[in-house]
Amino acid sequence: MEMKDYYAILGVKPSDDIKAIKTAYRRLARKYHPDVSTEADAEARFKEVAEAYEVLKDSERRAEYDELLKHRNDPDFGRRAYREAHHGDSGNAEDFSDIFASMFGQRSRTNQQHHHQRAARGQDVEIAAAMFLEETLKEQTRTLSYNVPVYNAFGLVEEEKAKTLNVKIPAGVMDGERIRVKGQGVPGVNGGANGDLYLIIKLAPHPLFEVMGHDLEIILPLAPWEAALGTKVSLPTLSDNILLTIPAGSQAGQRLRVKGKGLVSKKETGNLYAVIKIVMPAKPDDKSAALWQQLAEANPVFDPRTVWSKA
Image (cartoon, rainbow, N blue to C red; front, top):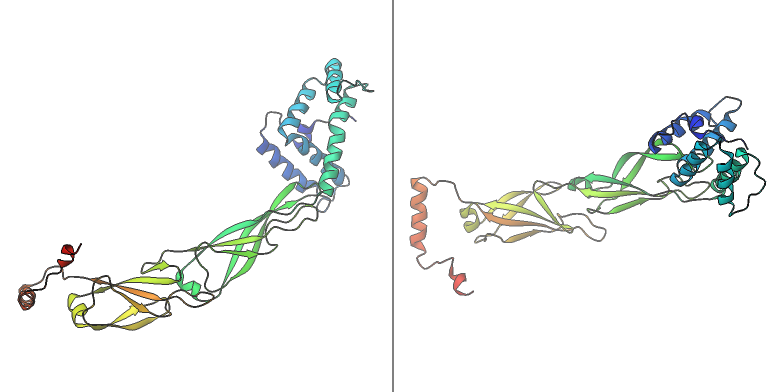
């Protein structure tokens, strides 16, 4: 077996890094692929390119090859390398080509057979899908685009191919939930099963609602007189606005439940809780100040800080 110049076959320099070698291999593998090329020797060239890549992609084998390449005109070195590779047996090595064949030829054929025969499952693919809370109320369909590798007959990545897929997202998904789409991940090698696609749900923060499991919370600002006298307010929900009755004497921090206006779940829909926040006017005018004074005089024994004495 004649010693081959793997660097020349791939069109790279011995000083090039693995990235350049991989790029050259992919380009040539596409060029000489038997299913694509019309050249008469395409299959032979394709196998030659794959053989060169098999050696140069492996740092240890590349180092061995570089050492042989460096001393290719030194027969004494060649015989020493042959003995080391065969545990002291000098064999029938007549020249450097025999030594090269014994160290790389058989291993290359073995690796090629190994790649042909070994089936391996493809890797799973994970894609994050950002969703608004409103979108979780009903089933959604998302069009996803992602790249998957294409393998050649030797189980090596030849190129990456864009893939587009429509995925249905059921109602009621939660933040961090993983939706599995079987067999839509990276293709398997040599007959192996395809990997799966996992869609990772990421719920976007909402300007009004705080998520608490399947329940939602919303801050409900009220004027002091609204909380004291009671009123009706228009309350936003994920799907519409509703009229909420505020009972007289409502307190700051009080939670008013709106049943069934939370997030959808497989068992039942969550609730919406309106948390009361008392908001004072910024600067009361003289008339308002007088009314506040009257209110204070009408409740001389009321002390909101009596709770401190009970602590």
